[in-house]
Image (tube, rainbow, N blue to C red; front, side, top):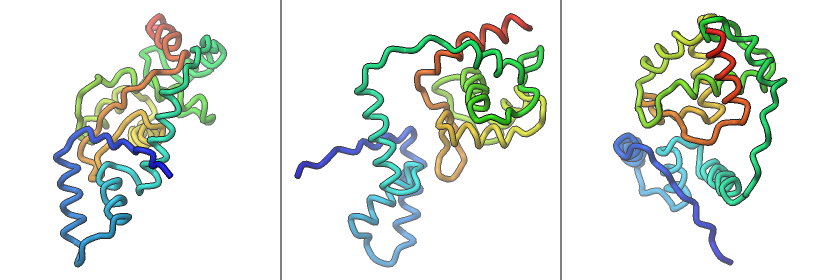
Length: 179
């Protein structure tokens, strides 16, 4: 039986190495190969090795598929635009998950790419972009939606580069036209 390669992407090697060192030094005996796989996956920000494999499998399927980009759903755009005020700040948190996700993409688009932030810096950015005062909710939702990545210790945050949904462009244009 052939093995499937599971790629491991680490955005910054220093926190990965520190987390792995702490996990290894806390042990009394050397880990088995399964325990070592779990330690490596946890140091990279995954729950365990199975989570890493599932994530790698999903990205592999997405990159292998050649799917035409569907046209934007302008109904979704108009629904999401209702949650933003005239200055382009999120005025209230949407109740529906689909509306929440599209609103999170707006925040994703405002975070500069290839920059590393502390939790405080990300919170300051999000505070300025929402009017309802719960920046921690947005930060956690962005991590859950895989739009933002943080290290295991929570010290560094980075935007995850990926293709946005087709509705993001029209939504950003609509918000820009309002202000």
